[in-house]
Image (cartoon, rainbow, N blue to C red; front, side, top):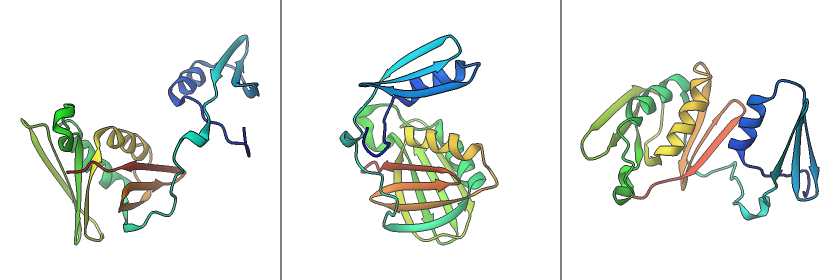
Length: 173
């Protein structure tokens, strides 16, 4: 690793840590990351972080602050109507529309149409956020409903809530 950076499969790491019942140690051994807990020993392939794009922490675009519970309620209301069909690419996300003092979210799969809204202090902007990113955002903000989240809508959709930073490219359409 360079400068203490390492990239490993988050789902596999989560599964290992969830099953761990004892103290966990993680160390590097050649091209592998070794995780030990009690009598269990796991080896994960190390992925080169240089192959992934940098996280842009200072995104340019329309910025606003929203209560996590407000964002959670509009995303949750629309998430079941997101299309999973690749042919309908622009329907595979949730349209998040900020206008004056309201955040609106709209999703459709061609059969169902869901519109949800909340009153907030915001700027005007809109973006289609991918469905999988909405699921991740929903999990992050659902755990901390009283927090204020910073949202930036630019070339990417970025949300910062407490110790979490979620950033995704937008769906064109």
